[in-house]
Image 1 (tube, rainbow, N blue to C red):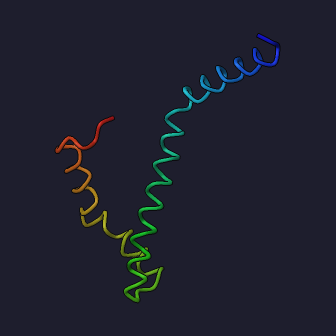
Image 2 (image 1 turned 45 degrees about the vertical axis):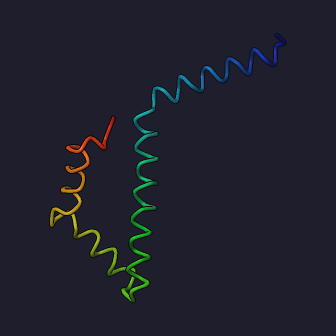
Image 3 (image 1 turned 60 degrees about the vertical axis):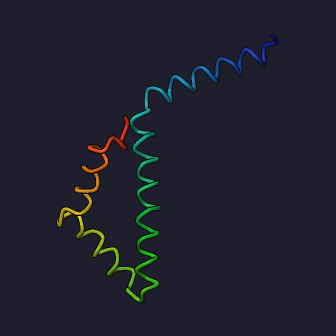
Length: 84
């Protein structure tokens, strides 16, 4: 192997090691993106029904205090849908 291939292999190994060390942060980042995209779709549906964006966001922010999101999360865990 040439020097360039050794450097490429070494940089790949180092990159994988760094990603493995910060895997929890990377997972949180991607989960935040998925969560934001999902909430945006729901807000757009509310906007199609002629509700202002700020009102739709306020309504969605109020849902956890009513137990709606936590109930669905618990249902996923108890039904075996969530594997970590």
